[in-house]
Image (cartoon, rainbow, N blue to C red):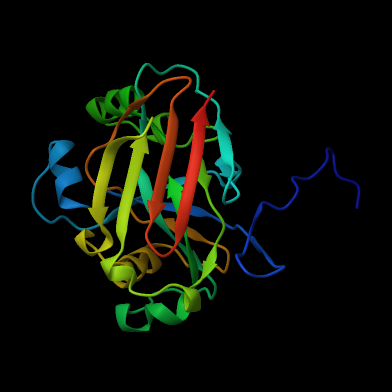
Length: 231
Ligand code: MN
């Protein structure tokens, strides 16, 4: 086939303990899905989950045991970290019920929903789309995907992020307002999920800024860790 320019290579993430790569379809994100984070953003109460997307090529893969480099983005003075549990969809579907959601999950990963908070806040104030605050280049670092059979007691898992060895975010997956199954139910009522979709499930409280030179260390207990330096 004669393309007008080279097509984008598939974007894929290694699967822990296997030779397989997991090709990424879309990146969905859940907004304000931990109560204490919703509060720090100025909201209270349980609202229906809401979603936004990031470009698949905003993904930066960071192998375990390495420190990835995260470029400080343009236009922002307030570049925030959001540590998140990532769910990898292995079997697509629409209108998936929460009780059936588990069958659609391939595995889990640790990711960061990096945010240009000042630009996001400007857009919120004006009622404009969040893309410039959320969906910029290199905004989605993540570690390898761990097959679900290797992940145990995820509901009890700690989710954590430090910056320069100082605690920033520290919570538990059981604090999710909308749990993973409920999130899949809601998301799949709005979009038909496909194998290869990722869901960034939301961040706990403690979001804050990083600057060039900062080193982040994050983990979800039982899933993995991610290390990044802002450059
Ligand atoms: Mn987020």
